[in-house]
Image 1 (cartoon, rainbow, N blue to C red):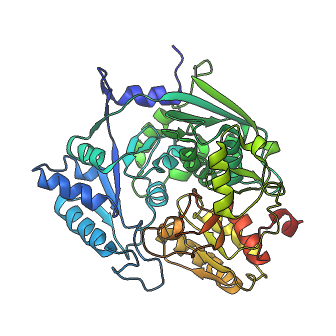
Image 2: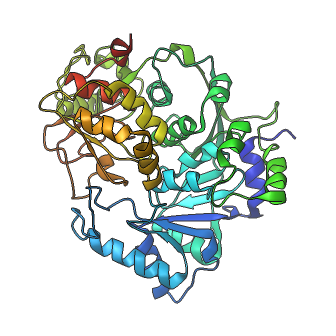
Length: 466
């Protein structure tokens, strides 16, 4: 029978099918917020990591990103997480990309750039945005720390089989629209539960033309539609991206891998339980107005009235979002004054993201009163950006230039923009207090963040590039 990309990887890793199927897990990624805890619990139970060479850990979630950082963090008890992860990975023989390591970075940025994730692999991590890595043709999904223990001890997991969903994206993005705008457009249309429990496969002309880092942004945001994971079939762009990466195959093994990878695509007649079709030409630069990524509109549109939002929002959720964001129906978003601008997170902190923002910032300056921060997604991204002089552009424009890490993508008792502050952010979530108690977050692309920082208010990047 015709099979989907998901079907092919699933069946290649299926060990037993009764009840919840048992799958072989190829790679396990850990970070310091949960990794040390999982390893400690495993040790306390008298178990060991069965294949340490298949596990990798990094410091990203609670580390300080200020220049000259040390093990001390702004997060209460943060240093304990760092110390525990360092101690437990050493004892287990797991490779750790520590603070100061040239390969340290946000887990979903660091893994692809090192070739840890590869087409056809199963990969898990105790982080909800693990599906980011499905952009390379892998089956990657987020788990809890208890599941991480099980995977570490057995190299397997029991997984309820998700439904398959196809998102067909035809046409080509244009007019300054990016993968982030496309993602917000899809979520706004399909809703925060539009892919609930699904393995989403993005396909179509727009995907074929999309660079790998943009594909990662799209797969990253599928989490905000409640997807189990997201995937894109590997192609020549994928192979070119992975060739020569530190943990990618070499020599004859590379040739054999590519031969296998070329078969990892959905058959023409494969059936999906759900489907959606998007015309990329209809996508404009986007911005969120509420406290959920589904509450998004084109940047030149106003806050919708309830009738327009009722498809996905209850009246209570709609009114609560407006109250929290201090907005009203029919209010224009363009020109709304902002207090902060943030570029970073596993969604939009790669080199291409920084380049797009720097192109807007060059020969311009952040507006007075706006605090602007850029946090590269990995030490490698930071190093490459500095080699190109992008750091000088960001600093010259008035941005803080940081060390790599998750930073203010989420608030864990550390750094915050402040209560009532309005921030345009390249992150993936705009939940209440996500970037600090009472902080109001508007999600957008890095280019829109940069344009808004310069204007001192939510701005349409198309007007700066006209």
